[in-house]
Image (cartoon, rainbow, N blue to C red; front, side):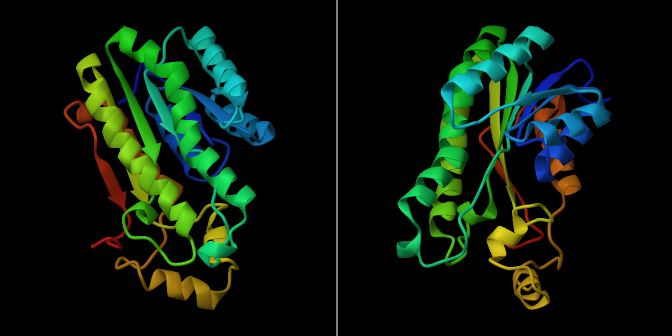
Length: 246
């Protein structure tokens, strides 16, 4: 019960890493809002863990404001925010990515962090405590070719994490990030372009431990960074990558 008495919002919590983090946090005693653009997916995870479901479009200011209002109205306070929602463009030469694809990737992966901060950081500062966790990527540290603008968006998130951490530290709010390697989530096929044994083998060959990451891997790391056990840790982007970035 390492999060007993804590409250949390997890964006993109209806599937993949977000769902794994939501389940783990609930197991450890947290009250969790599962926020997702797919409200049915959010509701399914929330029902499973006894949490709250909230539909949210993380690139829309009014939608994020409504999410924050609903969480604070139900919980009374917010202790943990996990910015997990994310997308990618398909692998292709950088010059072939359309402007619409670029705008969407930067909005979901970068603007969303700005919007959740805009509506929730003030509350955490007023409380003098809080933990924010941004789900970045090894792509922001060791970019793969043909995923250029996705790589750049995750590099932005890592820098944003460090900038947020240094500004919010005097207010008692910690900000960290996780850098997962490609994982068994709905985004895996998008990263690879197509899901074939040959392409999987090519991806796995870059991971020394020889397997993809799982939602459970992310959840265990997220639990530590968002718990009081990590009270002296802020501004860190922790690689959970099986050694890929070595």
